Length: 194
Image (tube, rainbow, N blue to C red):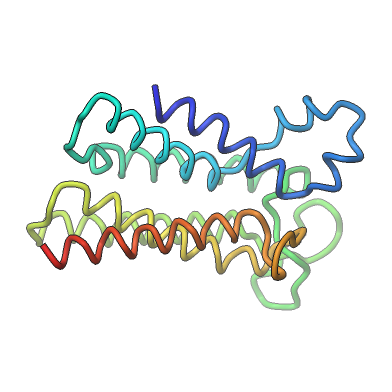
């Protein structure tokens, strides 16, 4: 329940902050908020919801490893939908002259960032499966590696997306990524010191 509530609210909060001016200009701010979503906000606030719930019920075991691969699969499926939507969703890239440029519906060659993310997630799946089969690791390790790797990737990916910077030239997604990256660097360093 903590994950569900956190993910629902977080996806909308961070999604809304992606374009604060659009919120101010919206005829119906609640509708704008309700239809704004981002996986980064969902993952971040879902994590916060789970951790708070676990503290309340005094549950100490890590649960993330159980959802790592189903989550990656769901994200791949979601990105296929984003790619098929083209420029009509905020998941397209900036214009490019590179060989990867694609017309996503507006006549301009753009980075197909949804496809980049699909490829990255498939490679991450493969790497995590290798780690799962070859190494002994503490509970929660796979999920932590997934989160760290994904948030680093998304921080970088957003530099080739049309963003609305809100602080230090960074978008709300990138700022959220920085916070989660530091959180998981800290968590993983605690594992190594134990």
